[in-house]
Each structure stands twice: as structure tokens, then as C-alpha cells.
Length: 129
Image 1 (tube, rainbow, N blue to C red):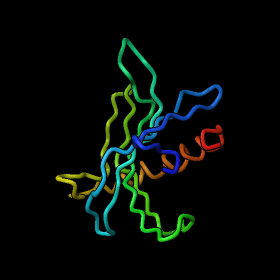
Image 2: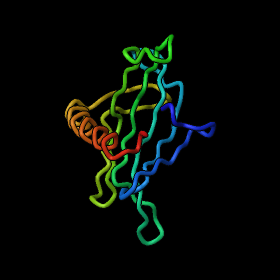
Image 3: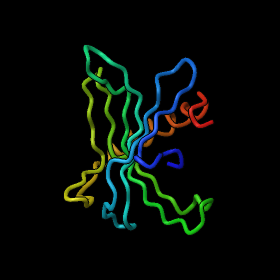
Image 4: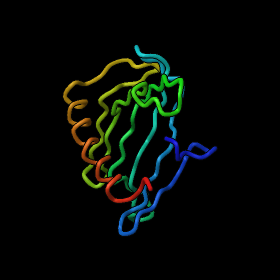
């Protein structure tokens, strides 16, 4: 999140890997824990002129920090998972009119499990340097 520019978008590169795109999708989402943002993280490639996500995950971020390094005051929840080459699009948190309306426990568990490994890989691959 700290790497987002004034346009709420950043493309990160690491040698040997597809670029990583981070962008702010929505703000002021109402949750039980306070106002949140929706942030997308994705790898993309081009196929027949179309951008294909490989993968893309959206995250709900509730940031209640009163100091920049107070990371315990940030809550992050996977909201959706998309893998275009497999035709997969799953939403574990449903947002309607900027409000969390419901969630799917099964997808939420699967998305959390995938996100832990994927974000670890992103860090190890050098995107966050």
C-alpha cells in the first residue's frame, strides 16, 4: 500500500517475473470494523490483445493506524480471486452499495490460504525491494 502513487496505482517489476500491479479500486467501504478500502494485486499478461489476470486478488483493508508503523492496527481480508486462463472468478466478500453485504466462508478460507503463499512468493521474488 505504501508504494501506491497519487493515482492509486503502481506497477512493480522483478527480474524473471511478470510485472505486479497494485491499485486502489474503492474507498469508504462500510464494514463492521470501520471504513475500508479495496485494493487489487495482480499479475497480467497479454493474450490476443486482452489483458489476462494470472492471478488477481482484491483485498478489503481496514486501516486504523494512528502511527505509520502500527501494523497491528491494519486488518486485511481477501475479497476475490480471479485466474483468467482457468475461467475462475470467486468472490468471498460481497460488496453492495459500498457496504459489505455477505461473505462465503468456503471461498474466504481458500482465498486466505492462497494469499498467504502468493504474498510470501511476491516478497521472496523481490517485488517489495
